[in-house]
Length: 270
Image (tube, rainbow, N blue to C red):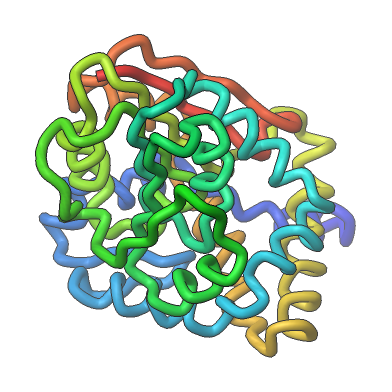
């Protein structure tokens, strides 16, 4: 085989449809297994594996996001929040909210009489978020598959770069749907597969050759920054995710691709 072609095959790790469907709840429930990156775990173990992942990088999480994305993740998050069309005094929930970037953007829009809640299972991420928090942002530790708020509690719900870490994908979205008020807005910001093959080749090269190297040097965890691009390659594509949202009951579903499709916003209403 030509060495150049072999290199492309070695880097191109985007999963086919059959492999992506392993992220769906039906497969997880049937096999009692779940994947994180390309590694398969017992269904009950994925939550612990994800938690361990974020424990290892929490203190450097924000810095690494800015370095690895060259700062563009801030623009993606602003665009996602814009789709929610937040008004003053509203109550907003950010599921898998981590250190609170999206919740802070929402808080600026809800004003002093509104509420913006970061909901995340990882204590270390929450602790990092509190260090840079602003007035109007509240942090709550909890599981995205069992959100500890009553039905119809929020005017809008966001989830940014977190749904692919949830063991039961549909359950996570059902919980978001449940806590939304009728007519409330939802946005899901997630990584995806770039459209342009040429661009995708260099993105893959960066993801699997450079990103783990930088991650290892700065955080000491090469493993964490190997699992990260793997989890993106195994995640459902935009059309597949839209179908999940539609089946749950979301309406007015729109797909917005960012930076050649590296990131995608799914916006919808209850």
